[in-house]
Image (cartoon, rainbow over all chains, first blue to last red; front, side, top):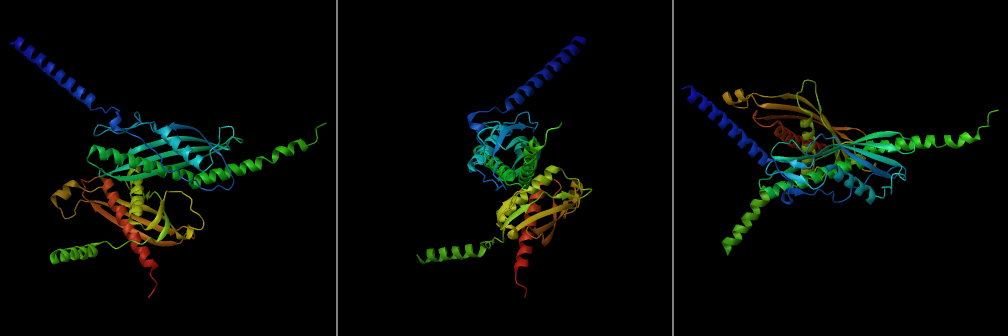
Length: 226
Length: 170
């Protein structure tokens, strides 16, 4: 009787362990892996024409730092076998900004020759929670605009959103997600390059530069002490 | 042959009758801002973001303006008189009740969202119209679906108000 009870318990434990192992294996199998079939490439497309500034300035994109806190930044969508990006979001944003600045002849050759240095902090890149009927693309970042000569800096925020139709087929899902994120990226870059915050930052830093500049030649005019 | 011609003509007439009237472009640009939430409104910032995106998508779809610009973007001084700025507040949100909706029906227990929007001309900050929107949806639905409905309703109301405002006084 005791032996039967013990064997029943052992059988129960064995069954439970087997169930856990099967569940863990299926969960591992569900974890999407990047493959050429489920990888999309995000391109800016047409460069965004920036706004006109009061004086000519040259920018240099120093770095793009990921502040999204996303452990898998290249995984855009987990469902249906997953959708992956071919590059890190930070690289995509850097390329997009540089491409637009270069097209408008506002990109400096190097950091030393630039008037303003841009350090970008990326908060969100990819899909965000939507209604479930469509895809909601969102790109959000903040930029520290730094005057290299003065060492002063100002912040400019940018957000880009896009809504794309939902889809059922895997191929269409990938196509719509790609279009959606591209739309959001374009929107965010435009929001940054044509934003009032960037204009204000450039104007303020230029003013500070002008007010600081005449003070320097005035110094040698002072008579030496003694 | 006659039957075919008649059928084609009839098809044309039906298409012409059911076709939606072409929406005219009334303004050059429109800037939609993130709506603020009044005190006591329990909605996540994600909802406000989603509503902002939906409002911009609906403005683009409706072709009320030539270009929908993002929040805080600059506009040429020449375009400012033909540019709009849309801002607003979510004044009330009721979560609804699935039990009430199931037991009573007829709209009882529905989720409810009320919002007010101001449409302002960019150049002189003149208030062109004030829009009040009230949307009700089934409590089982995602609240983002409500944002979609509210954005559609808002753009419809803005078009109506601006079209009426542009008509010459009798």
